[in-house]
Length: 155
Length: 259
Image 1 (spheres, rainbow over the protein chains, first blue to last red):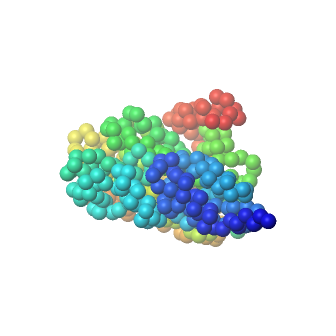
Image 2: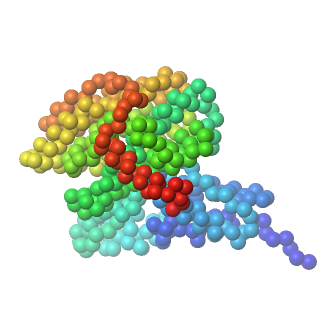
Image 3: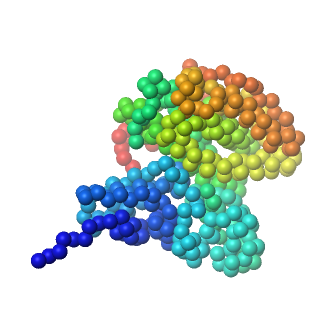
């Protein structure tokens, strides 16, 4: 006698989404980035609602495809929607997400006066430009370890 | 997402308003993207590219809302690219070419401050638009910071930098209020709560804000009151016709191609 496969619950889906990353921020899962807003599971479908970090984010199609791929093993059709109903804000990044950002050389979002160098933790840093290589990051310079670095924008 | 909650008589008014806003963001975004690779300093190359990307993203999201509203089979790309130059509804301020760096900064300054007043005038009448605008305003804050730094920098530099910036502001001042021209069917938008105040109120607030920033720099700029509604019969400038040729060239090179 074989047991019925365990029912898919929201937690299963959220756990599976931990393997999905924004290609511009590869060290933090979309769950820790705070862009997974709603997950709903019906008997025959999984629906995931995501919040774009920026309106002009060019990675949305890639993220949508990655979500569908990551949930495919659950064996249910998956739909992914993006919504503005809830604006994504940088304080949606989890503690784990912030720690991972710092570990990979990005200062997590903070007021400009509270930004610390992700390499030497110095507070003697200066913003070079509010605009970095992607919409979500600014350019900073550390006066102590003389290292340029990127900080996530507070938004 | 549907256009439900919008009465049939409000649809044309809202469509015209969305189109003018989307065209503004599209035209300034595309214009600014021309600085990629040739901005005066490297960090500006990055900043202008990033700002242009934001604006094009805002335009795309607005065209997507318009596509839902019109429901005539055209998607955001078709709305953005498949029109003749005469059919674009961008403000006259954006009908000027990007010019030199001082002109680009003067145009951005006048546009960003006016756009902030416009965005603040959008009410909760159509939730999909209100939600998008809430998100866009968070991003536009950074554009305003950027251009305010440049206004200060060019004005404080004196010499040619200041004189070019001031001349550009004066040359563009006549057309600047066009961003806040009242939509032709403003009454319908106010009645539906899509606008929370008349554009004349937004324009008054904008003039105060421009003076608040420019007065300490010793620049006094006359911004004419109550611009006429956007001229639907306007002949696009040669600058815009050239830009149109650029931004539609890839799309026209192979009709129906996917990239």
